[in-house]
Image 1: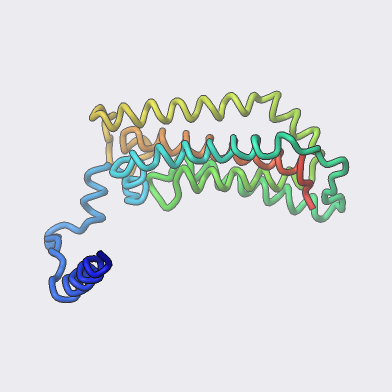
Image 2: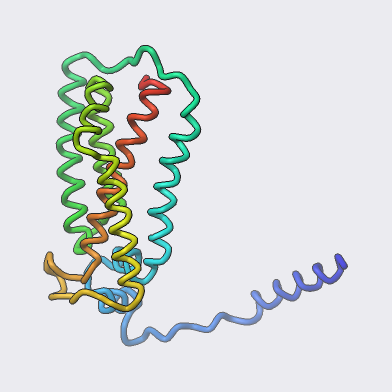
Length: 220
C-alpha cells in the first residue's frame, strides 16, 4: 500500500514541474480593478474581505467572540489578583492617555473611511482596543469595570455581532445596497456598515479581554 502513496507523490511532483498552471487572462483589466468595480470601493482589501470573501469574514468574527468566551471559561475558577500594579508616575500617565486619544481618533478614521483608504474594521478595532489598553494601564481597574458595565459594553458587543451576521447573510443572499459613487464616503453598499460593526465588535471585545486578564493576571 505504501508504494501506491509513493508513486502518487512522485506523479504529483512531476505534474507540478512539467504541467504549467492555466494562466488567467487579465490583459485588459487587472484583478484589483475587477475587485474595485465589483465591490464599489477603492480599497480592494475591504472589497475582498466584506464582499468577495464575506463568508470567511463571518466566521472570523464568530471565532473572535468564541475566544473571549473561552477566556472567561478558562479563568472562571481562578482567584482574582489581590493587588494590581499600574503606572502612577505623571509622565507615564500623560503619555499613555495622549497615545490613547490619538489611537482612538485613528480607530474612528479607519472605521468610517476604511473602504476608501488602507484600513478597515479589523484594523479600527485593534486601534480602539489599543486605546482602551493605554487607559487601563493608568486607571483603576474598578473604575474601568464600572465604566464597562455602565455603558453596557458587553450588550453592545453582542448586538454588533448579531447585526453583522444578519447584514452579511442578507448581502450573501444577493440583496445589496446601492453602491453609490465610487470614492465617496457613502459608497460600497453595506461595506462601510460592516466595517463599523467589526470595529465596534473588536474594540469592545478587546476591552472585555483586557479587564479579564487584569483582574486575574494583573497588569505588570
